[in-house]
Length: 529
Image (cartoon, rainbow, N blue to C red; front, side, top):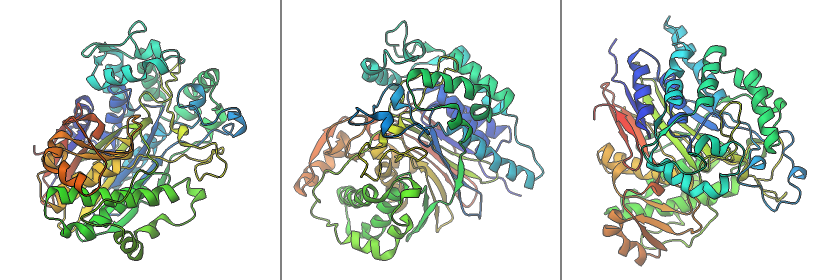
């Protein structure tokens, strides 16, 4: 049987190197992704970690993709009463750490899928110690501090310097690291060694859970040991939309996956109206507005959904939204925006099995709370909840907050299969749409589709403005016309991290792969490039 070329892409080169090593050892795409997820938690700790969440799209050839929701629910004690005296949920500190961390449970559930693959082919999964070895060594011996780490540290210093465990873990003698400094995470190394020895379930049912629960309670979090014991990641059916170019997949609630699918489903109906790159951007921006309006109205915890989100992808609803979009004029904006920091990674193994994976703490360094006994920094995703009891995002125990996270996958009519995604909060659906449209509809090479100038509608990375941000290189050709059509536009530097860290892996029907990563990150892609 013909083998496919392997491919891997990640926004930090160390994660890609880990993924490649596992693939070259005969590991599955899932095993490579778990190994890379552990590594990137060490080398990009401001973006993601074991104390955060994850979402998976897993594709086996000729089978419907599997989704895994590894996002955390609110603690049993996380009630409106717990936040009495607050106008909104704090974004930093112990009270911001209110949802369970799902990422490790997601690794566990994904490895169960991998085991099913291996059992069917009379093979064995690689040992967990092998998958976690790179991460352990990097946490012990250190990795070079990146510019994005330094920038995140500068931005969050005042908010986080006094938060439990933050300074001793992520600062150098209570001051900022410099780019190129060696960052070691010895407590996290010990925790990873413990997981490698005892199994990932120890995070929720064992000694690690006990220590985490104690440390979080000390920091003022409502999370308790019972919340660890009751948590499980779960397999979910992805949302799907068929377009003229193929089938597109993304995650259901509580993610904004519906928005990503809506943008491309709408663009599929409108793109022939455009003649220029400016037309493409304008139409995608207007599709984004319609998608975000629907997202903000309907997406919430699965138990609270007022409708089946898949119905928004039906022909009648798409046509209704299309009627709100005009080639020559922009709809008024702003609308409520979301922001966050995340990593996305993609993989393809020799059997043609592919993964699209996203892992996040939400904001840079999450809540900032670091468990002294484990070295794990906890997410602040719970700050997406509202303390307004009439909001569809109203805080309630055991429910999940809205998630910007959404890994994407597509099966094209010509046989290509594409794993793609990005970090960037509000920008995730927009960047996905830009790279997919450029590559699929406008036949741009994959690396160019990712590297060329992009735009972002709304806030991200803590910005307060809701306007349209356009990178300088794209503004040079498009800004004047976009302003003429009514866009409230501001120009930012080219190759700007505001635009996210995108990547993609493409498996062609002949078996060769393409992979690309974003020059806005510290990434590396392996494929035919």
